[in-house]
Image (cartoon, rainbow, N blue to C red; front, side, top):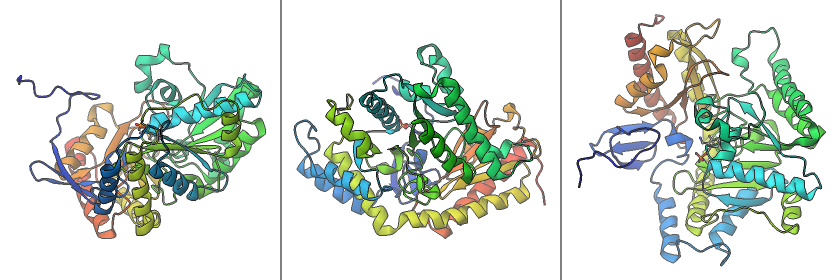
Length: 448
Ligand code: PMP
């Protein structure tokens, strides 16, 4: 062995301790230190860690077959998971295509949309509009839809440069409009963009119904969602909901789309769908889109691990567990408790400028001035510092500082959907302590 500390790299070198084990909402490192997983990893571990019933079902599948290539066999886990998934979807979304992650799901959704347009005699439709800021993945196709400059910049010349419209960050707006009017204003920006691109060229609009990593749980005014659906219908533009983060119960409904009664044309899911028990994702579309593509020679797309029985057995076990424990309902209930707790932080910490979210996808954002919503100085490095102070105290949260589009440092609090009210109080006690420590080290005022 060499003396190198690690041969492995991710985005950067990794100074974290070794993970030993997980149990429910907790993770333990090799030194026995306990952490509350307040972000479910990266909004993944929706049913908590090491659920014994799920593990037993995965093990049972392992003992039968870990892999069977989909061109050689159908498998019960993949068929059963597809059927279960369709049963949880709004009417009309009844065809499922499996993938292994979120970027793959987004790419697959766009490619299905494109092939559908070809079957409709519309080869000129290729532009995919997305929002800024947004996160849709980091493979080239998904990255081009992602509105987040630090990830795009190194690859900018290699991206097609698909059009973007502003995400509805109404909490930053200082106009005199009502929330309803603001929602409509942002929807009209999409309409303007479609007209500018030439509606006959626009294939699809992709959006996160509740923003994730790039915007920090951004929820649009209610009026936005229905109007966007209408605009897409007006021009024959397919509406793709990226529910990679919001799907599988995270926001208190199985799909976030249900909050507004929207049926997208294609839904992309991952993260909580496999809930960390397997790399798994899916797109779901209606047979209206899928059948013409299959009739025209098939979907020219697919990944080796798509629909593998082990991942699908895990996914099925996860969905069954969610149903048996009523976790979607628990996410709705606990989301209200968590949101009230986060809002109460604003009484003491004037540098918290906004608290937002839906269900158990919540966030708070730091500002230097609530009136202008100007961000904290970059030099305070708030998005890293608070995460470190919380980590040291045994709480994991997820943060970003976005450049452009939204203001500053935001923090996602998104615990597993199994969390209880006492556990939320424990988590908040640690978070409060960490914020207090941050205020002190940054020299920020607190209110008594
Ligand atoms: N879409 C959304 C909304 C996401 O949050 C993510 C991951 N953060 C992705 C796509 C990409 O998923 P993955 O990292 O699994 O490729």
